[in-house]
Length: 149
Image (cartoon, rainbow, N blue to C red; front, side, top):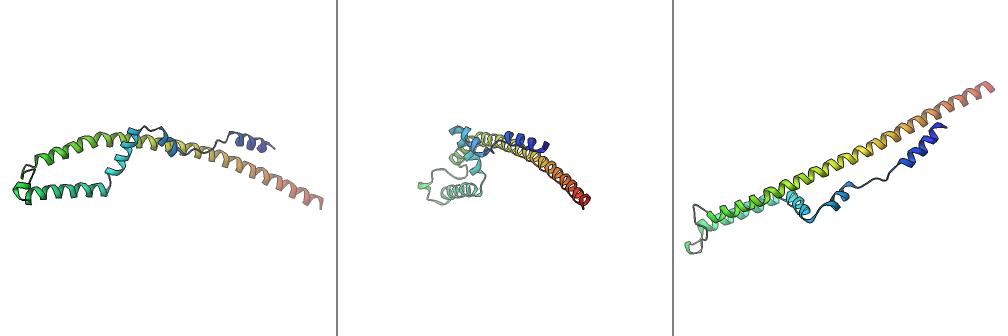
C-alpha cells in the first residue's frame, strides 16, 4: 500500500519533458542566431572550398591575365591581403560568440539530460519497490495456499 501513495506522489511531481533545443533557439537574438549560423557554416569543407576557389581565381587572374586587366599586381596582392584580413577580423569574433552560445546550449542540454535521468531513476526505484512488494505478496499468497491444502 505504501508504494501506491509513492506512485501517486511521483506522478504528481512528474513534469512534461522540455525540448531544450527549441527553448534555446527562441531565446537567441537575431545577431546571436547569425553568429551561430556563421560558426556552423565556416567550419565546413564547403566554406574551405569557397575560400580556396576564390583565392585561386584571384591570384590566377592577377598573375596570368593581361597586365591591363590585372587589378591587384603580383607579387604583393595587397588588395587580396586586405580583403582576406577583413574576412578574418570579422569572422573571428562572430565565431567566438557562436562557440560561446553553442557552449551554453550544450550546458543547457546536459542539465536537461540530468533532470530526465534523475526523474527516470526515481521512477525506476519506485517500480523496483513496487515489484518487490508484489513479490512479497505473492510469496504470502503461495504460503497461504500451501497451508490451506
